[in-house]
Image (cartoon, rainbow, N blue to C red; front, side, top):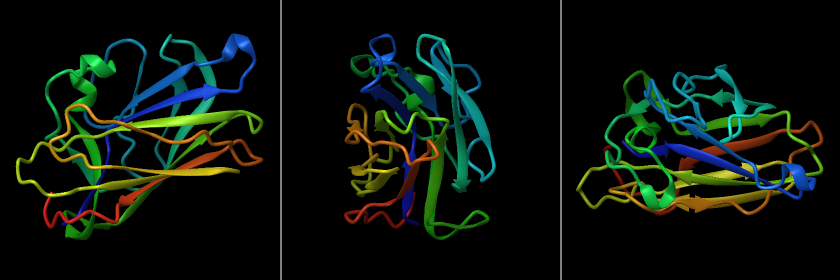
Length: 196
């Protein structure tokens, strides 16, 4: 089974009016029932059709929504179980993630998953930061490709195998004319993990 992972998504908004610049939205994907303040809980977001309203890390409401368009398989509960203080990531966010697979596993094949951030300003640029972890100790490369797509796009890669400190950040992406940015995740070109 080859896996793709999404664990933590952090969105930083740029090119906004001064009073809105550098606001951050943090989302945890997994089974965490409680998170520190300032985190959006993406529990239950693995399947298509799920959606949540997003607030900033300061607890401010927004008009943004996160919607799952193409399902992940399930939740990986084998992530890093130590807080990543240097990155500001609590253990509740690093210990689990969503995963997919390119061969039959569980109830099917989930070779690419997709989410949309809706309600964005089409004239503003947004960057996306990703963290994922799968503590396996097997040396396998589970590289995941994250494509951030709007009117502009950016693609980044992260290997979650035994990851305790690495993140990747997209370039600045502008939403499409409807205010939507799509995030697609699938195996990266260097992935060689036959099993999760």
